[in-house]
Length: 427
Image 1 (cartoon, rainbow, N blue to C red):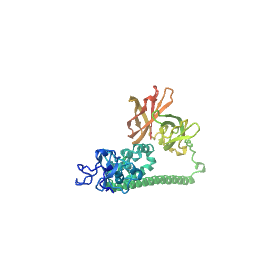
Image 2 (tube, helix red, strand yellow):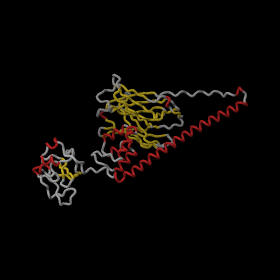
Image 3 (cartoon, rainbow, N blue to C red):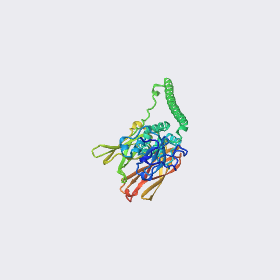
Image 4 (spheres, rainbow, N blue to C red):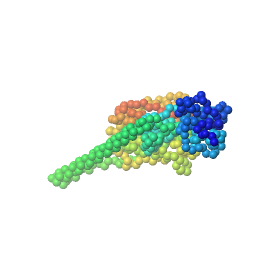
């Protein structure tokens, strides 16, 4: 019977000139002879109670603790008898992560998940670009994905793209849990206090209205009956519904994605639709819904443009769009003279490497700074038909100030030569 702690792959003999992990040079780990280089890559005992990775031609510096079980019969049949008896990992074909890729920091991952997890930045940092994009486009799964990833990081279950644990978790996890709890508690307190203030203002307004009514009734007792009823005030005009002015869609020539543009009109001069949910559904010629997109924006007075993408149309073909949004009951009174607005100016274009950059400036009349202002850019051909759409963000637009934006996702080959651009800013 072969001793499993000293036998090299395929019966190769130890290389006494190479010190092995876990030793000081007194015991040499297995090293294959050149004529045994056909031994399959995998994990094998290092002769010191652990394991070391054989890449098929030489030992690497990657080590691992000894596993509990030998490989299955199929794996044993593919290597020499001695190697089959000594391999201990369940999957010896899995190579370790590249040594030149530094481990990811627990502190950095936790802070990104806590502060900007809704944009998928934590997953981009870990090298998980695919799920990072999905998290970005869904705004963190509407908050659910953000919470799940934060819990995974705090519990030590999050890994980088190589499957490695985060560096510094054992050292900093306690502080991370405490800080996260404090942030959540402060957020809860802020929301409770804010709700209480709003309720108090509503109650005070109701009390003032009741007191005003009482004074009027008392005064009416001393007045002639003819003067008891005040003159009737004209009724406020009814709030009108949002109107869908224009829709457009098309397929990206470089991928299977489709873009869409929806132009909305708010005809109410003194009402806005805060945090309005705009759902855009893509239908084929038979009326089957192929995909849908959800957009959340504050619809101010005048025109608002919504731009987005469909990712799951597949082999289907979009025939029309169905747009659903809030009813007039969701409108909030906001006189035009008091509501802030945006204006876009100085639109310019430039081409480079087959792409077109669209730049411009947005000016705000709001009395407060606005963050993450959306700028929707649409392209029209000579006939005025929308032939493309894109959007970008301005991280901070100062109160009464101006900020520049740039949209650089235009494929020149897919646009007509006489194209013109328009841009609209929204909250």
